[in-house]
Length: 189
Image (cartoon, rainbow, N blue to C red; front, side, top):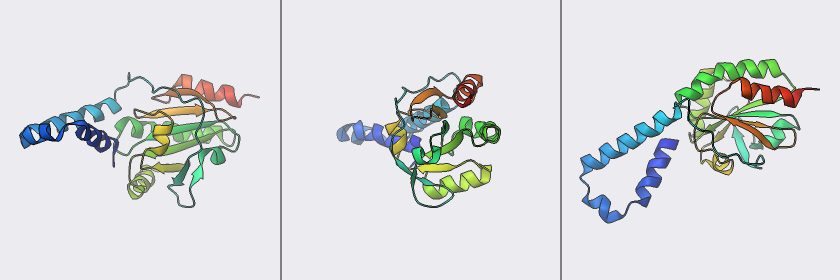
């Protein structure tokens, strides 16, 4: 279920049943369409605020899109700094960052890890997207928002820099000079 559908389902669940019964179907559909459009538009707003930081990387196992047993991102990092890209297949801002993240991953080599976490998409949709976009860095699926919720991620795109010890030291909505500077400081000798 996408983040838009998830948000709409939460909205509908909060409305009293008798109110839903009184609303004409056309009005309800129009309202839901406007809410969905606003949610998607918020994804691509460059000035959107970062989510509240989580102090530590949570121990959640995620399914690798390349196949294999679920793994925790602690295991993937193996004590190295890590940049986590939280994205969704429908998010244009997320898609636009992939090339920059690929270049960063190549430049960092083994000194740090870049990983992607697809949020809210079914596993087969996430795999198809990662393959079509040519994402070479490790990618994982979070279809039920377990990891995203635990890390207090409320908007996409969302980048987190995690230090050697698993502390979240930086959050951003885009790969920018500040984000890269944080990573460079973590890998400096």
